[in-house]
Image (cartoon, rainbow, N blue to C red; front, side, top):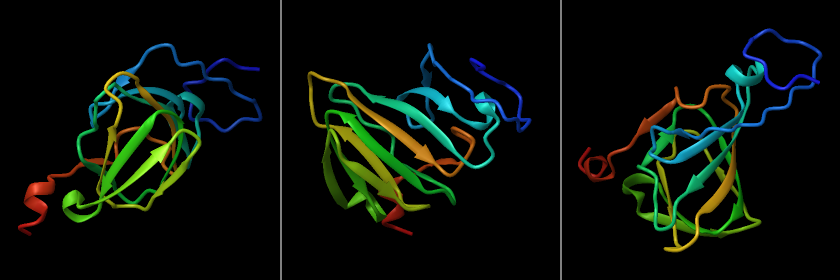
Length: 142
C-alpha cells in the first residue's frame, strides 16, 4: 500500500493519504487535503477535511460547475446560501449537506467555543482552482 502519490498516473494501487499540515483555502478556512488529483491522481473527485474555528466563517463563495457533498463530523453550522446569501440551513454533526454547482454559500460555525469539522467531497479533483469568491452585497445590484 502506498502512503501518498504525487503522480497523476492511474494505477491499481490503493493509496492512503495522511495529511499532516493544514492549508488555508481561498475561502479562508483551514483545510486538510485528502483525496485529490495532486495526492492520488484522481480524475474526478476530491475529499478533504475542513475546520471552521470557533465563531468562524468562510468567505462567501461558490464552486464553478462542481457539486459539493458535505458530512458534518462535529459542531453546528449555519450555511447561508443563494442570491445575496438570503437563505440558510442549520446542520448538526451527523448531517449530510448537498450544494449544487454555482450556488453561492457561506458556512458559519454557531459555536464560540468549539471548532466545527466536516468532510467535503466534490466531483472536482482540484482543491481550490474552481472556487470563486462571491460578493453578496454586489450580487443584489446586478
